[in-house]
Length: 255
Ligand SMILES: [Zn+2]
Ligand SMILES: [Zn+2]
Figure 1 (cartoon, rainbow, N blue to C red):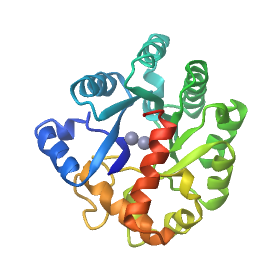
Figure 2 (cartoon, rainbow, N blue to C red):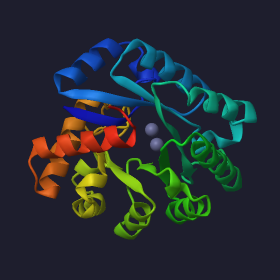
Figure 3 (cartoon, helix red, strand yellow):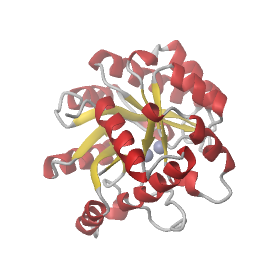
């Protein structure tokens, strides 16, 4: 059984065939999945999905790209949702310097507010980082985010960055890019992440792993990520999926 720690089954891309996608995930051995909401619409959809399927869990937060749209009411709503028994984390949150819809200072402020909220409700956080390594580390340190820890999702940093995150109590999650043929860095980093801090994800519908690169991603493909990581870690596929599933269940407090 596998645990896909980051899915967007709440995305429009799955509107037409969600039942088939979920069925294929189950056939592939994917047991639990965390549906990540990152704005008003996707949070609503994530909550509806976790009500419908007992093996789905939700994470609720606000994406840095849309930081400029987040109001105090949204934050309060996220706090209320965090009390729901199927909400297991706060996020995704973080910094994304690839897109410039939200200025950096606004992104940082919204990031900080969500870390403070997670500490208040004592839940792990899911971090989205794009081209913002140093600022991510700085904010996490300044806000003492290690108190709750969480996940560096779809990790793309170097080993120095990984070490900083591991020291702050974070797990490192790999997705499709670790399987890409030209992806040297994530492969190198993955070999050095301790087994008890390793997680797998798809981030579907984005970033489909090799050989499906460029297609719509779906949870069933997390097996391809697991196969690659097992090879890199020189452990069996069974060991890799069992350990990463146990890591996820422990982190998300799922019995
Ligand atoms: Zn993300
Ligand atoms: Zn995501």
